[in-house]
Image 1 (cartoon, protein in one colour):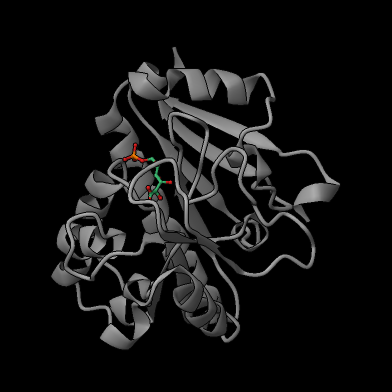
Image 2 (image 1 turned 180 degrees about the horizontal axis):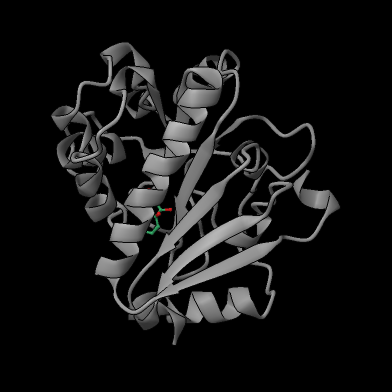
Length: 233
Ligand code: 6PG
């Protein structure tokens, strides 16, 4: 569990964001194929924000068994489903509306219910999920990930809930739902996508081992951080 062992970090450096996108999309396809071959389905937690958009767009071209994909999201803003700030809308537009994943296998966080109800609603859903095969995350300039922010609860404890209701996010909008650090750590593979010079300070702090929220994600197999040279510094 997150509080019992140090974070194992593997850094993967790419010259450009375009290189990162190409390799990340290929890795997702490979992990999906392996999971489907082994267990018949693939349970994938999406990252929010803007960095993953190009990766999701690249996934449209995957040659795979879309009927075996199950989609979740690591955090959501408490705005309507069609709001431009909505992570699920971003993923739909970039990728999901272009591939035949069964609608019943795409599980957005119902942020329109408000933080508390949406967090409880999604925790109830997650209770029926057999496992996550891949969790993907972004990194904020302050070191946040999903909607786990500095000086806020991260849910690292062994008995932490699967989801957290956020009402005062420093990154607008203020009301969000986030999977907890404990829930986000429950996967054999956890990828972070980090691109652009704006993330340089957060990456440097992470590399120094400072206590940023991204450092609280501590799966047993460690995390793989996909970073471009602009963010690496
Ligand atoms: C969110 C995201 C958040 C994001 C980082 C990086 O809902 O805001 O989940 O954690 O991943 O803030 O965002 P960018 O990729 O847009 O830089």
